[in-house]
Image (cartoon, rainbow, N blue to C red; front, top):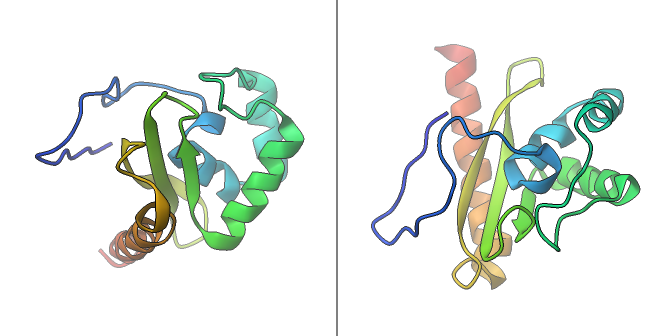
Length: 140
């Protein structure tokens, strides 16, 4: 895992190696969307879907609907689902066979990440960056 913070970054509890539930983070949802449904069900059966905040999706059917949309768009969002006051956008990084090997995300304070930049500009940025990473993984 690699992390980078900008000069205007705010401190959160996100640290390398910290584990969390996949259903409540943008990166986690991006990875789940790239997995077969049966594997997603296995993960949810094993770990559950506890709420981290009042905004966390805790209904399996609602999550699967969201995963379908993520699969269509390639982009997952987290709007205060893992941490109050924090938004994130992410996409899965997949190997040449289409298996997820990680995710790329951008996160920040909800008051900064909103509107068109959050819904259009940042998704385009993570998708373009993920494409470059996937090419590097395949050809280097």
